[in-house]
Length: 106
Image (cartoon, rainbow, N blue to C red):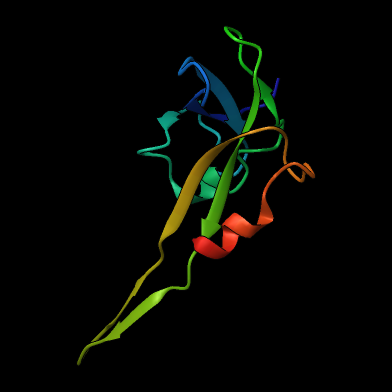
């Protein structure tokens, strides 16, 4: 049996938590929420998407968009900040019903 990390994500329809498994991190059977998930774990969150909610039956996945890094240069170091926008979306990844125009608003 393989190792993985888990991210618990609320269903966008009924708020019941669903487990998303990721092999993007250290795979030490760690448990996270969207508030505390490391970027490397988040990078593989949709490997088994979409998830189907056990309570209401809705299919959903996690949409992650990385914004341009903000870079500040100081005398002796450079600070690089990377921001991500995370959204829980009804449907399945690459579904035609997903509104691509919304990405431009991010």
